[in-house]
Length: 416
Image (tube, rainbow, N blue to C red; front, side, top):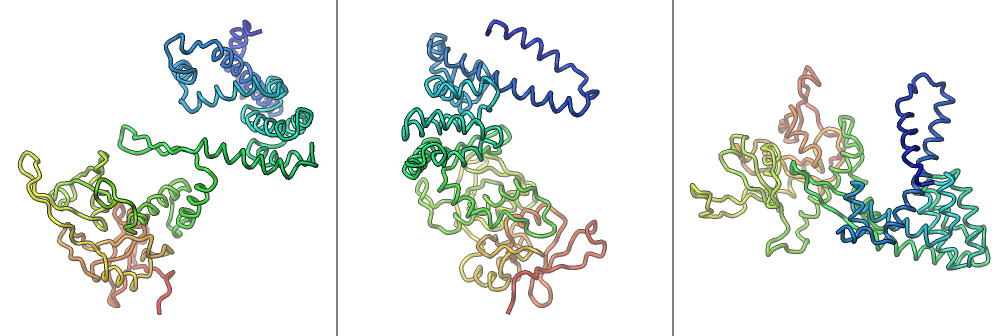
């Protein structure tokens, strides 16, 4: 009875105060299984309540624009999570009742219920209610062995078990349905955090997911034995490299009348003294170190400002390592010159050895190719780079890494 939920809540609250450290391992495992089963049963109750409230129009009665918006405020959910809750509640209410009962009995999880519901709907459309009932039994049995991801993969061939005579045609229908869901659910959200960083969330369809993996996987691997980044950090940096490469092609459509570019505003005096912070044209702020790193291989537009900050004169881009000079740099370094790195030239920035803002010139003898990771690393570490007597770059490690500070070179790129 729903009226007994408060008593159930009290009982669960009492369990939270149990000294579980004193329980034998077998009882701990049994308790975990029971807690998880209760969680799924409660999910069934919650979905039934959501469906009833949605059907009554409670949300609009209380001033919300939809049940999802009302749930966001009431349960402190995100809008996508609230919408999924409303959608699943509706599907469980109008679909095969066996799925709802399996969830209420604790035999399947909420995520498995989503998979089974989608599959049962496809089976019923293709083969009728009798095949759908058979498919439910098979899927619930599989749910006791497989997680939702594997269950969804297996479910694409469910008709091989319950209606083999129409399995091939139904498999195509299932793939078409999955494609429609992927198209419907695709989205990308960019949320600016309070500290200026960007939260990237979304769901990619299969084609776009394949393109993204093809683009970032080659540059997501560790760049060498010194690479201490986590896999997530490497994927982040790979996405940055892909964006830099796209901007470098010059083939992106114009934005606001200008070629695609990153614009950083900073004071020249602060830049030369390594003190000036900067701001992107999108409003995000950058540290002095980030400004100086971007100044290595990005367009600088000098601006003369009045005392009130009014722009009086805008100069041309200058000091970029482009054209024949970059080609000569590629021929010399063959890729990222940092020891142990295998990144090819197209993934690399041109770094001024003696910083341009400090008076360094733009020449082959004052430049080195570095991938995005090692470019950041060089700007934020005690490593230094120089050209040796043979004109090739060599890197001097910090004393804490090598007390003798013996110069190191990249031996990955073959030279002729």
